[in-house]
Image (tube, rainbow over all chains, first blue to last red; front, side):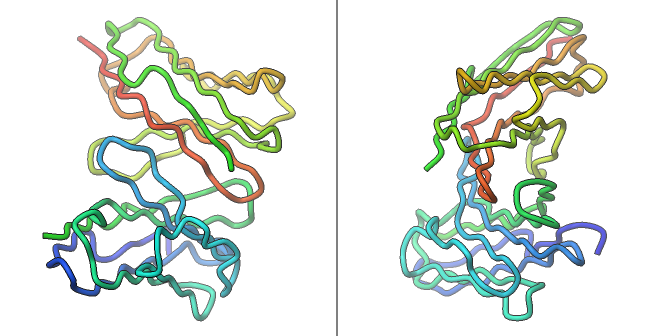
Length: 113
Length: 110
């Protein structure tokens, strides 16, 4: 596609529920990144995919968070047993190669009530 | 890991004046330094970037300088306009990972 697409744009869920956030990167971009942005803060790294594999998941806060990219294109960020502290904007970015040319999606605003 | 510090956190300037935002980074292996502009509820948009083999880069009213020895880089916006009002983030990249500063909220007063 023309840009990085993220769905849904907004998600409200109850504490304890499971959510999935989707990212559709720019066609041909092999690198995909997930970031989390809390109010008034800069985006924080969660996970990086190169192709289908998670090359670096060191930013995932705990084992309730998991992400997949089974065919090397679309990625899904999965959060189990959501907590109010998970409320944030989840941003996805993709790039043609490592180290530059990052394009961000518009993000998914997750609110856990 | 990389630690990026950004100052000031807020900046208010009169239209037409200049705005300067400064960042420092900790990892000497970082070699790419992009700046992003983020308007309320929107995605971060790349406005300018600089690589470690360059000391300065300019694009119309925006310029970025990099001092690798001191590990700091700065964004300069000249002749500010109301549409420059936004949150600006600096970032440093080592290999593939973008590490962001905390952001500067710039307000241009008409």
